[in-house]
Length: 83
Image 1 (cartoon, rainbow, N blue to C red):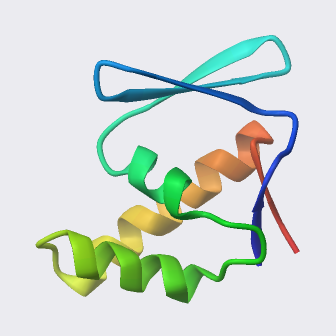
Image 2 (cartoon, rainbow, N blue to C red):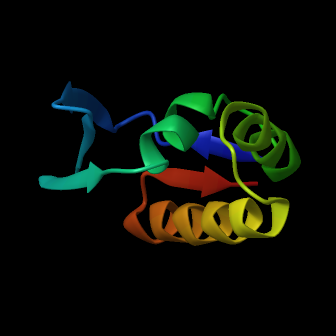
């Protein structure tokens, strides 16, 4: 299950999402802001994939690959945790 780090500050500007954590700013673009906004505490990867497929015209394999790449990046940055 995925959870947002409660110590992350979010700010939107010009269709970009800025995540501020640990005195660093991380910019989310493309589908990443949608994924971030779709994450609620205790959400599964399967639910996120379904949300992407319902909201974007994309093949399932591509959506799954992009989702995994973005989740991995968010986990490495420490703005997202997985239990």
